[in-house]
Length: 218
Image (tube, rainbow, N blue to C red; front, side, top):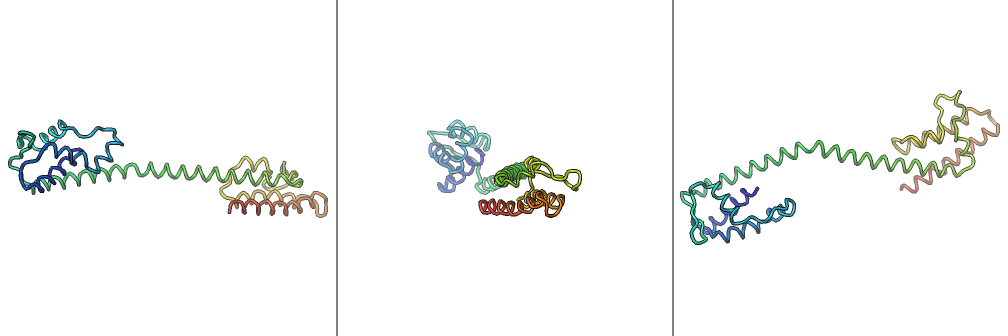
């Protein structure tokens, strides 16, 4: 990147001066005032480009085509058209390299974002689960679901302790689990019995609890 900045700055000064000479002090000043370099220095913690660095870069970019006299860099057999082509080629090379690096890291970034989003969603759903269960358990009739009702008779035994250990995929799934508790009790106990009446009344308590939690989420 330093080579590109030096080459770009040098090309600009040569075009402006309309000569083959450039002040080394001015070249250094223009390079270190470069907006891109100013952004790179804090992130890379590299110091500003020194005179020695500039001379070494120029020697490598233009072997045996320069001389330094009284602070003036003189370039020999230099064609600005060729220099411009060299500059554009370096731009293209760096751009392709950056595109390749970004493409290579995209899967990892996407996986990280997805994992973070999934983790946040999971924590939110677990919070909703605990909030809803805590609120529901405030009702006396909800205590009948501390253990699975009719465990030997119902197709899928479910209770509050079991639900508390699960992570729902959505609020609707959490609601369905709780609804199953009520449905199991309603179907298991004989119609008109005290347990059956408690189960029927717990339906209203469940609806009230779900309504409360939904209002909080909204």
